[in-house]
Length: 201
DNA sequence: GTATCGATGATCT
DNA sequence: GATCATCGATACC
Image (cartoon, rainbow, N blue to C red; front, top):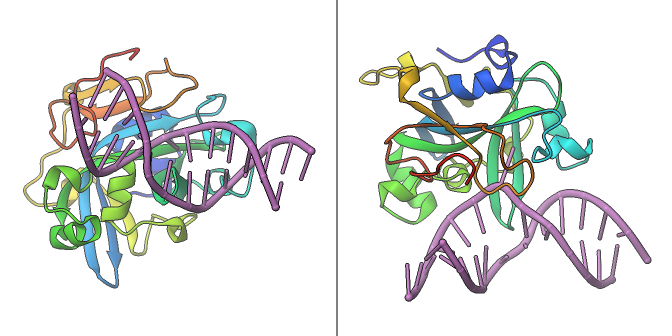
């Protein structure tokens, strides 16, 4: 079942946690590719690390748009990061940081140039490349169409992830608002981008 | 036009 | 853990 706008319109931190275990799916002309979300980060109003903090620009306009739409941005040159617009305050989003590859693995391998499963979707720019997500996907609606997110019970053979298997720490790579505990990931899952990060590091 | 800066990743040790 | 390649977006002149 595809996640609806009302799912994304809840509190952004809550949505970041509830997205763990859901499936990100991108169906392109080259074929479908999908993975299970195992790591997310929340970016909030009043949060200096959030792109919306400095106000609206050409780059971040998607994050001020409707919830349930994609916000994709370029960073460090030719790399892209995929977010979902969330919350009910405007300018909030959840960054998808890692997937466990599920479907279309041959296509992901081709796009990424490696067959190592741990290097396909473990990191925000890696998963964007593996799923063929670029700037053209920004502002796209995720509640229908070819780029969507599905509930954890949508795929046979996968069980929902219990709350006590979800760890919460500070975020990766940010230089501002470093101490906010806004990162969620599946404990002991080998597809998470950084395994043993402790609070405050 | 030009300088600066990353919500990174690959490649070392 | 540390270093660095790399380039789009932005801010400022």
